[in-house]
Image (tube, rainbow, N blue to C red; front, side):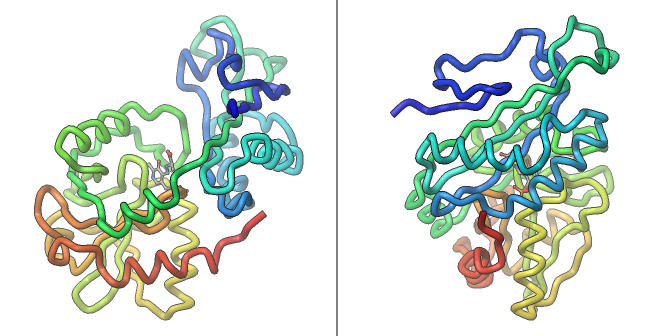
Amino acid sequence: MSRIAYVNGQYRALRDACVNIEDRGYQFADGVYEVCEVRGGKLVDLPRHLARLERSLSELRIAMPMPFASLAVVMHEVVRRNRVSYGLIYLQITRGVAHRDHAFPPGSVKPALVVTAKSLNFAKNQNAAAHGIGVITVPENRWPRVDIKSVSLLPNVLAKQLAKEQGAYEAWFVDREGYVTEGSSSNAWIVTSDGRVVTRSADSGILAGITRAVLLDVLAALQIRLEERPFTPEEAYGAAEAFVTASTQIVMPVVSIDGKPIGGGIPGPLAAKLREHFHQFSAFS
Ligand code: PDD
């Protein structure tokens, strides 16, 4: 079955789907995106993703291409047409198509919207969680507005590639003060030896992850102590557990950081518990 994409008002076979070469997303990375998990054919935490999307767009002064309700209809339709039961949906909005000029195009230029969906291998993801992943640390070199979910991801791409080349899966950025900000495509967490869960506050230096926000609800419900504060790689090396969160990874245990084993080099019990309980606190639509 060929995959189907929604591109500016039309559902197209993925191989025929294309955007204009003067799309500002292509020329300036002038756009934003969202990734939602799909489970049982349903979108996970869609309202929270749409709220973040609206914020990203408004920070960049890009108009919403259509009302929320219509966007949700398109997203469900893309999931349905691709017959995704477990996987992800990707949505991208750029400032639109115009002759190349750094300043914004005239208001008559409409934002461009692309939505795709793909199935993921559930067993493979579970297997990764059962074994845990390796993380390396890299210097933070992104712009300060990482709170905007912009498609401008070059530092993230380079960091992820470096991790891969070093046999790891994720790279954690470390700011000038020596604190971990977040991963190249995930939020970063550690667990102290007395069971406190630590993650950087969403105020600065990180994307306010939706998985992160839901996990805060899970922690509160399970009465697990939380500390929203920055931590250093050195503190992480000595942590009882570490994990990352992102929409398609949920809670993914980290078993090594910069080659040093964490929690004896096997996934920790708390990460497993949080992963297990996570979807009880998600909204499905
Ligand atoms: N990335 N931080 C960064 C830099 C991210 O790119 C992501 C997600 C997150 C976690 O956000 P959420 O929990 O809302 O997925 C944090 C997506 C999955 C991606 O780029 O593919």
